[in-house]
Length: 151
Image 1 (tube, rainbow, N blue to C red):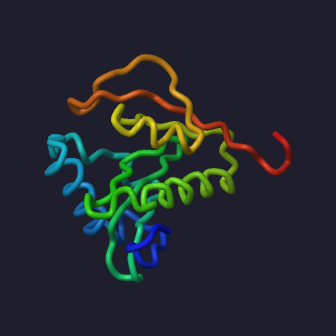
Image 2 (cartoon, rainbow, N blue to C red):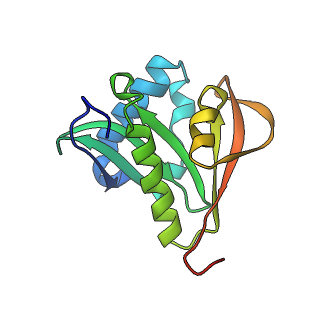
């Protein structure tokens, strides 16, 4: 991890047990910082998704993300003061690893166009035109998962 971050651990989280901190992080990033309407941030996918929390020193949550059963990665959020330090990459690697061990052949996401280069560096490829979501330009991106059995 980059200097100045300390020990970052990305751990599984559940909507049932960790809802308060998951909502805090996403509200801070998406609702307060980016102006996403509160009603658009919360959806039925949260209950069935596999969530993660990025923790500093095992006690301070600084980021989150989720993987839906359909293979969609979303709600990747890192507190502003921790961006550019590898936290987002650690979250994404944990989500993709979970998808891999769960047998997914690919995952996809709706990337904010401002973050598309970040996802491209992780191997995601853009598919289709730019579209609006929550008033922010997005592009669909996909990552084919390489499996150890050669498929």
